[in-house]
Length: 157
Image 1 (spheres, helix red, strand yellow):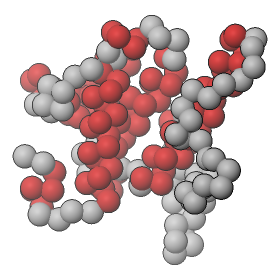
Image 2 (image 1 turned 120 degrees about the horizontal axis):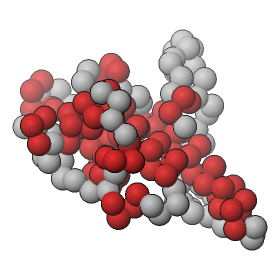
Image 3 (image 1 turned 180 degrees about the vertical axis):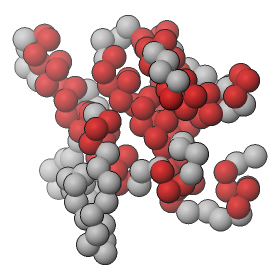
Image 4 (image 1 turned 90 degrees about the vertical axis):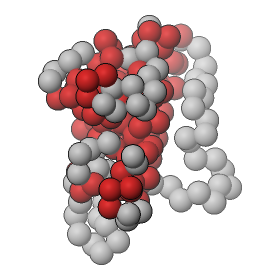
């Protein structure tokens, strides 16, 4: 049963949870209901992470040695954060976007340094484009709409 099925309340945190499941599916190669004794993938990943299990051991073998282990680990940890047991422990989608953009900004720099060649975009859809109407994320230490400081998710990257 989906998370909103328990409460019949749909809000942003349900979307964050669902997005987290997608991130975990992408990094592990497992289906959402493939959590073994833990039931769901989200519960399995949370248990694996919190018990100190190796993130590379949890990732899909098809991507494990692709040369982007740091980025894969960030996306796995982000998936675990997004599927937190309580909605209040989950980041906002704005925070999720900021983490992914920061991760994508580090990847081209890494590629340029490793190859010695001209920089190229690895994830062009995550980067802002000239003339884009998409709102640019503010820094993660910003304030909410009501001016209150909120928690900083920068430690994930």
